[in-house]
Amino acid sequence: MLSKKIILVLAIALNILTWSISLLLHDPQSPLSIHYTGLKYTDIVSGVFYPRFQPGTREVDKIWYNTERYRDFIANRVKCPIPYLDYKFEYPPFIGLIWTVSTCVAFTYTRNYIIASRIHYFVQSIILFVFSLVCTITLYEILKKIGREKHVLLLPILPSMIIYLIYN
Image (cartoon, rainbow, N blue to C red; front, top):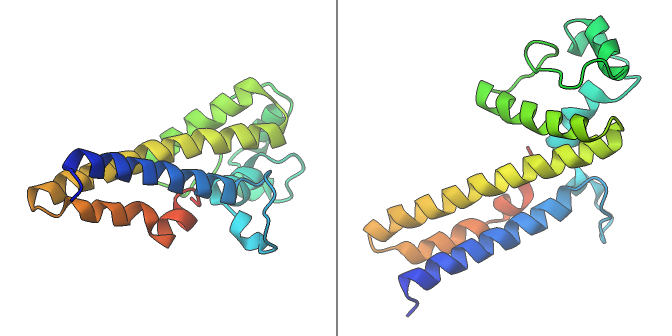
């Protein structure tokens, strides 16, 4: 019989493993050993970051509210464009705040959008990891109250956690 502390430590270790797999799986710059490239997709980079920040984006006038602001950003006169104000962003405000932090960190470090997308990806991934840990610990505490704490070990090994933890 596993002690309650060991169950929590195992759940956290499994969470770290799941996050690491998801991180490598969706990292646009890391190669996959299998040929199913659909697993590489992540909204964090491909679906949202590239369309807004990639130089030469064709539909910039449909994404940015002010194309002059976009030109200022590309010319390095604007370091941290703000979602909702500078460009369309279809996620809730809390996600917009996290997005602003990760893009500002990335573009403060570099103006190369490929390197910036990678920094942004890792900042977003770390934030998602923290929230997944909070979710695991919270679920553990809830399950502990009803004597089912070992069931928390199922959460990090669910295929959906591996596939979607760092998907969006």
